Image 1 (tube, rainbow, N blue to C red):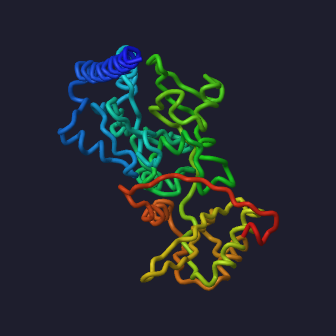
Image 2: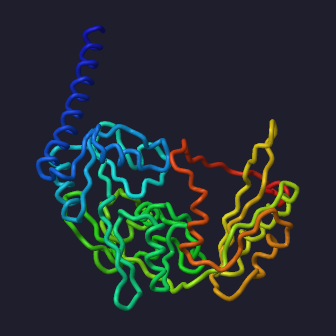
Image 3: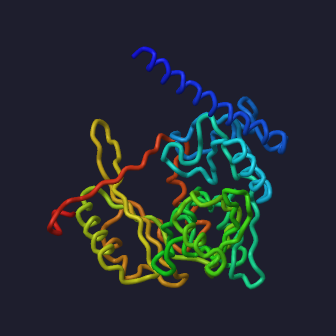
Length: 350
């Protein structure tokens, strides 16, 4: 029995040493190929990149950080990692609370920070954008053209994560998920090949990337459909605890029968500490795609409730997502959970 145990322990140790060696070899070969783009612990770039995450759940210990600046760099890097069996993670904007989703212990972190191409086509119908940007970079850039895109509802959210994961957005009732608004991808495959994926070219990959996250390749460019937009009517409407029943009823009624595709809401019940007690307020982000109409009927159930805060006004998407983005608190211990409300009647579900 002792011999068998020792054999298992030795096999585990050898496997661990082999894996660690492979990862270090990956860092070594990457450094030989990219001497100015691979960074190790104690370097300023490493320390910066390894802290550039929204949630502290991603504060891990990669062996090195590879920071490519082109699709060719990514391609060469993937070939090296494949040849050395190097385990790696990819980080775009870093807005994810699931541990290991965009960082890695004792492996290679590929940080997309320097893939920062952004341009608008001559006909102004397409935005080409690299995965190194956040939407707080995208919206002000598009504003000069009187355009926007169906991207993140909060400015600090990164471009690649939301576009590959699906993407709830303010224009969803008109145009679908953020992923639905991508019409072309430049992708590095697992073998290092650089391809384009569209509805007609590599159509299966094009389909898979719309919600498949980073499981099918490393996207180095997104081409998105643009949306004409000078200003929208939007803001945050907040009500006191005593009005929460009406607030929840308004939320349920809106969600069960969306009547106006120009509208979008993000409701929340927020705990507010008050001495030894915790009170609650209701806050809803209201968005309406119009630069002329105020207080549309679809929001009347909310706006008829007496408020303790109201920022509704005409705003550019840059201004609005800067406002909503203030809710993004960096470097917190954030986790994702899900739950189900059980009930058979309207009152029970409320």
